[in-house]
Each structure stands twice: as C-alpha cells, then as structure tokens.
Image (cartoon, rainbow over all chains, first blue to last red; front, side, top):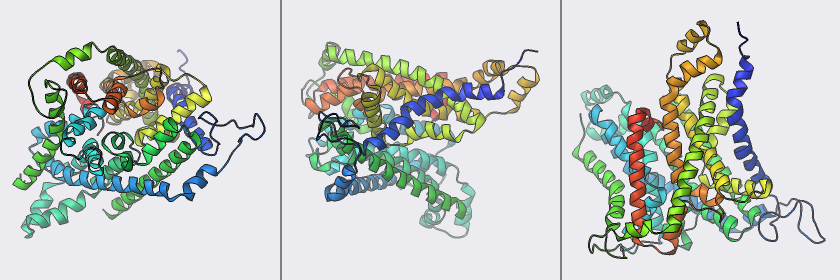
Length: 279
Length: 258
C-alpha cells in the first residue's frame, strides 16, 4: 500500500496557508498598531525612527499620545458622542426591525424566504450608493449635514443586521406558547410582552452587537451626511492618518477604539451567557 | 396566523424605508436636470457621459480586476480555513479568521496602511488593495464552508477511508464535491464584498489606484452630478445579477450569512 501522508502533515497543509496569511496580514499589523501608538510622529508624516538619526530628534518610545488623549476633554467627548450615536442607531434599528421581523416570522412559511430576501436586497447595493441616496432626499428638506442626517444614514445602512438575527430568533418560537397564553386569558399585548418579547432577547442582543460595533467605528456616513460638528471617532482616526498624517496619534485612537469594541463585545457575550443560564 | 394590521403597517413602512431611497436614485439617473430636486424629463445623457468618462472606466476595470483576484485567493484560503476549523477545532485559527469580519473596517484599513508603508515599504496600489480584500474575505468564505461541513454526516468520510481512499482522494472525490455549493457561495460573496468595499480600499489604495467606490466617493464629496445616480443604478444592476446567479448556482449562497 502507498504510504498516506501523516495526519499531522495533512493538518498543516490545510491549516497552514490561511493561518500564515492572516498572521502576516492581520495579526502582525494589529500588533504594529500597538507599537505605533507609543511612537513619535515622523517629520513628514508616518512614524519617527526608533533610533535618533541626528541630535534633538524625537526617537524611541513615548506615552505622549495617550497623555494627549487623557489630557484633553475633547477626545473623550468624541468617544462619548460615538457611543451615543451607536446607542441611538441601535434603538432606532430595533424599533424598525422588530415589527418587520415579527411580520416575517408570522407569515406563511413559503412567503418568508422572499420577505427576508427583500430585506437583504437593498443591502446588496453599494454602501456609498445607499448613503448618497439620503443626500438626494435630505437635501431639499434642509436636513443634510445635520446630526439627524447622520442618524438616518446609520440606521438605513445597518437595519438588515438587526432584522436578520431577530427574524432567526422569532421564527423558532413555538406558536403553541401563544395559544396557551391566550387560553389562560392573556390579551394581545400581554402575549407579546410576557411571551414573545422575553424569548426574543437573544435575538435583540445579537442584533445590537451587529449594529453597535460597526457604528462605533464608522467614518464615511458622518463624512458624507454630517457637518464638521458631527465627527465621530472614525473621522478623527481618518483625519490623523490621511489629513494631519500624525500616525502615532491615529494609532493611539485606533487602540482606544479597539478597546471600546472589545468592551462592548465582552458585555454582549456576558449578557448572552447570563441569558442562556436563565432560560 | 395572528398578526394584527398594526404589525403589517409597521412592516410595510419598514420596507418603504428600505426601498424608497434606492428608487429615488434610479429615478433621478434618468432625469434631464443637473439637480436631483424635481423631475424635468427623461434622458439617457448621464449614462452616455458615464461611458465617456475615462477615469470612471479605469476605476471600473480596477474594481473588477481586484474583485476577481481577491475573490479567487480568498476562496482558496477561506475554504482551507473552513475545513481546518471544522476538522481540527483550532482556536487560534478561528480567532484569526473571525476577528477581521467582526471588527470595524476602519481598524483593519489603518493597520494595513501602517504595515504596507512602514514595514513592507511597498507603494500603495493594486497589490495592497488586493491583499487587504483577501484578508477580510477569508472569514466570510470560511464561515460558509464550515457551516456546510457542520451539516454533514461524518460517516461518509469514514466510509471513504474504509474503502482505501487516501486523504487526498477523500478530499477530491468526497469532501470537495459536497462542499462545492458553499465554496461557490463564498466565491460570489467575496466578489461582491470586494467590488463593494469602500472603507478598507480608501486606506490601502494610496494615490496610485482608484476603484468604483473611491470614484463615487470623490464625486459625492466634490461635485454631485446625476452621473453618480447612473453609476449607482448600474452597480445595483450588477449586484442584482450576481444575486440571481447565486440563487441559481448555489441556493445556499443567500443564506450563507445566517
């Protein structure tokens, strides 16, 4: 019999290439950002060298970028504003998505796939096109370049991320539960509030994470639909890298954003675990 | 089943919210006026200008080239990753594959910008954009392929081994045909994601190369003309075609994200 390659070799043949690629182009760049956030800015943008090439030049590592962040309220304020926008977007998405997801879940089975497809379809058109569409609509209404425009754009772009997990959850509910509640004398509102809603909490949580996190880092929507006062963290990061070209400062902001995202993801995961224990 | 008229009214309002803006874009792409404020008359002028716009055509070509190369590379690597994650339960690989999908795009964009310029010292352009696109597409392919494998009966692979198939034969004759719909779905999804990407491209393209989304962004920021509506309408048509193809070739493609 021919000698088969050892299972270990097969394992590395399959897992090796994607692991290597992602180590080089995802993990290493991420670690470099951490280091870059402790560096000095270069004279012409980018990063200053680690070792000084001439006297008096800033070189080596510094905590100055973080000192700058914690030394001025303005940065914390913009982070806080990003959280507020993310929270408002999530709430608005929830308000729009819940009835829609519920209507789909309670439609005849053969119609559901089409209704879900109709939710995803606009989401398949280009991201910028979907944002630009609101420029046309909000312009004549004198709402363009206002916080309202930013919020509308955010909700529009992220709505499917709330509808899909909600629908996936609601679709699994056993209709017998509602029948039982009705037999026990519960009205329509009580049936929703005490049966459907509590059971849908995992779906709400998943949708919240899927909407909240991308909004937190969004720069294009405030850039297109908002005014200069509507800048969020993403806009500051973009400006640091491509505008003022202060890369260490931009790297520091990116690290802070990463920490914020990890905190949100951590809270969502903890709530998810708590929920599944309770169920 | 029980569903109050209120529920239906809210659902219809949500659908209207989703579709009215896109309908407005399409409508005004045929409007014989420089301003997208009121309907003046029907024209194909904006489409004619679009096809006479060299910068736009070059950008469209770049977008296609990037999407084809990035989607193929991401499909090969993502399929390997999906199989490896299913079979060997590698925690590290799972983290590497899923994190780029889950985090805000801007973080991947700026970290690759720093990496390309500061560490690799390459000129930003086609190469850096393609690599960046592969990085975030791998995850989507891997998720779809793994989901496909997860729903499969393990005994098929055991049967192949018992019948004396080598691991390579098992892969080529059993695993690959079975996961093919997932692989095709991943390929189409990567192609669409790459064609569509703005944020990561924005940071990794430099001044050397432009893509359709970058071109649209410039037009929106500098001078909005109905040409934007025309290119948007055409892009919608392309995506729509992709979805129809996907639903024929691989019916799983549309459920891949779920």
